[in-house]
Image (tube, rainbow, N blue to C red; front, side):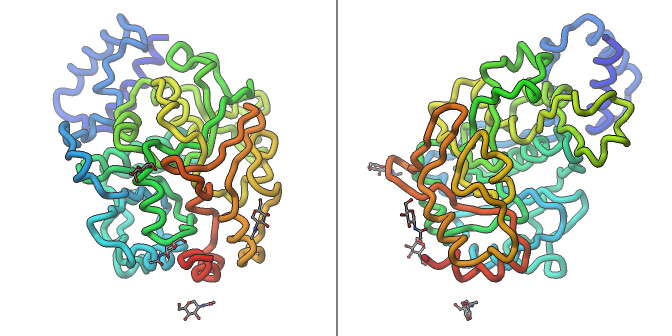
Length: 372
Ligand SMILES: *[C@@H]1O[C@H](CO)[C@@H](O)[C@H](O)[C@H]1NC(C)=O
Ligand SMILES: *[C@@H]1O[C@H](CO)[C@@H](O)[C@H](O)[C@H]1NC(C)=O
Ligand SMILES: *[C@@H]1O[C@H](CO)[C@@H](O)[C@H](O)[C@H]1NC(C)=O
Ligand SMILES: *[C@@H]1O[C@H](CO)[C@@H](O)[C@H](O)[C@H]1NC(C)=O
C-alpha cells in the first residue's frame, strides 16, 4: 500500500524539476508517505502548480479585466486556422488573448500556421497527452495556469483544434463577457460503470458530473480549476477511459476490459470539481460548443437537436442554420431543460461547433462569420 503511494510521489518528482540532493529528499518523502494517508498529503509537491504558479495574487479590478482568453487544445498543425485568422482579424488586440497546448516542442509560426494570431502562442509547459488518461485535463489546467498570469483575462474558453466559431468575434465576446456565470455542460452521471467508489471521500457519488469538456469559465472558477490538486489526483489514479474494443487484446494484462470503469477524465473533471466546491449556482449548466459527432451517442442522456451524426457533405447552410437555431438543451436524465440565456436574455445555445476538417470549415466560412 505505502509502496504504491511512494511510487506515485516519485513519478511526480521525476516529471517536475527534481535535481540535486535527491536521495535525501526521497528518503524524507518516503517517510512522509509511510506515516501519512493520501488525503493528508501536502498538495504542493504533487500538484501541477509547482511547476509555475505565479499568476498574480491580486487581480486587476473587474473593469480592467476585459480580455476573453481562448485556450486551444491542439496536436500540432491546426486544420481550421484560416477561419480563426479571419475571426481574430476583426477583434481589437486588447479584447482577447490566445494560448495553445500542443505537442511539446511544436512552434506556431509563418511556416506552420495560416493564422497570424497563433504565432508563438504555444505554451512552454505543454505535456504529451495520452488518450484516455488524466493528461488531457492536466493540459487544460496548464493552459489555465498560463492564461491566469495575464490579469486582464476575465473569461477562459476552451476550444479544440477542429472547432469553428459560429459567430463573429463581437457577438461571442459580448455573449461570454456579459454573463455573470460560467458555462459548463454538466449533468449528474448516474451510470455506475463510470464512477469508481475508490474516489470517495474526495469525490462523493452525489457530486459526480458528466458533460462535454469544452467550457467557458469566469476568472474565479478558472483559478479554482488551475489550483485544484486533490480532485485531480483522484482522477489521475482512478479515472481512465476504457480502451476501444479494437485495443482490448493489447490490454489483456488488466483483466476483462469490458468490466473496467470507463471513466473518461475530460468529460467529468471540471463539472465534478465545481459541484464539489458548491459552485453550481454560478454556472450555466450547459455547453456552448456543439459536437457533431457525439450527438447520436449521447441521445440517451441529453437531447440537443436531431439524433444524427453528420457527414462532411452535410456541412452546408441548413446545418449551420440548424445549429444556430437551437435555443434549448434537454437533459433527459435530470428531467431538466436548459433554455439558453446569457445574462438573462434568451440566446442561441451554441457559439462554436466541432468537429470540422479544413475543407468543411472553408466551405462554411461565409456562413458562420456573417449573420445568417
Ligand atoms: C445584464 O443584464 C442586465 C439587465 O438586463 C443589464 O442591466 C446589465 O447591464 C447586463 N450586464 C452586462 C454586463 O451587460
Ligand atoms: C428554428 O426553430 C424553430 C422552432 O424550433 C422552427 O420553427 C424553425 O423552422 C427553425 N428554423 C430554422 C431555420 O431551422
Ligand atoms: C465568401 O465571401 C467572400 C468575400 O466576402 C467571397 O469573395 C467568396 O466568394 C465567398 N465564398 C463563397 C463560397 O460564398
Ligand atoms: C456580428 O454578428 C452579429 C450576430 O450574428 C451581427 O448582428 C453583427 O452585425 C455582426 N457584426 C459584424 C461587424 O459583422
